[in-house]
Length: 88
Image (tube, rainbow, N blue to C red; front, side):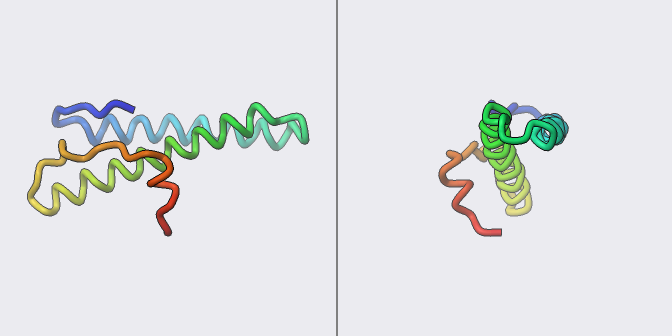
């Protein structure tokens, strides 16, 4: 996901997150009905979950930079392997 560099960047990220959450719900509903034949949907859901985690991480980075008085534009999308390694 490319990050906008204007003042509406946080809104753009939140909009992307909202769309992905809606897509995630659709995929979960499809999987509930698909049974064992949902391999494609499971793969799409996994990819979507990783991208969603990256977006949340980017949003947290931006907010932390803002709180620290730094430029939130310095936040970057981190690799999924990094983001997925975080503990809740």
